[in-house]
Length: 444
Image (cartoon, rainbow, N blue to C red):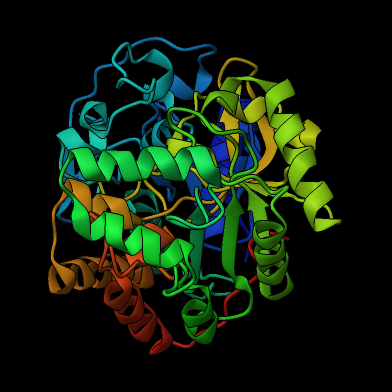
């Protein structure tokens, strides 16, 4: 049974968001039409996206944004729908009280990031400026939830069903900003570290550094063997490798170091490996290409997945050159200081470029939670962190979406100011494995 969706105008924006909702999320057969005659004579399930309803259709009142080009500041009136926050509100007799297509497009395209004038010290769009944070739905994959509420209406009225129900999936990802805490950092970096420990009277760190460098103890961040024992192999685990040079916000160890390159090669034998470009590369294609080439040379294989260091990106600029560099999938869509769903969804999507009015040829995989957010921003202990993660897993599972998390070895280490989150990772994996569903290869 094919769902027909009528609109007087079918813009690129409208095509994009209907494809995302009905093909990617709901798995419903549908077709778009601008023919009023065809729509009014159609005997099957019908959505009328127009100011004037068609008899026997499910009527959604358009608010105009999908027919615009370019960007401008919009102010939306909020309402509720089945207990959910919703915008923009429609004052009419439409079948739902808001324009679900506009709302979904606004969130997934990251429209608000184009018009924002407030950014943090790293040039990042802050969660505090988002509609999701201001209206308390950042913790929800709201677009997915709206979509399934819409499907309930369509099923009740027309008997519309998904042709293939999607399954819950999960992916554990790691950013290797720095492979080790003390090892392989060279004489100058270790000497300055020891001097800093001495000046600050941090004798425990000084003693541990010396023991590690002398070979009496393992480096605190050398948890790779333990990780390999508990992490699923293949595409269910993904490592992003920093291949740039050392800098103020880049503490990497050079891939020219044989032991580091050997570790990266060992990881790549078991898991998918991607590029974690340096702090300054997010708007610099040439720099990005150099670092990508460094990683490709170390691995002797193509690299097609990426996540920006510090989650530092600008929409759409940072995403425009990725496909020309051979990147097919990007994993930065989330906030450094909040858990939840930056784009309002737990479903991978292609980013829509509002300045060129077309989709970019890169799949964006949003993440829900990062270890540093739980520990440094929210200051959660182990039990609280596991509970927070389980709540996020549950809401993603409720819409059979994709749950993605970010981890760093310094938060899993046995020493250091950020230590101690290994039990949180273990608790998350134990919980996820209780669902034991299919986990599709998101990097394909």
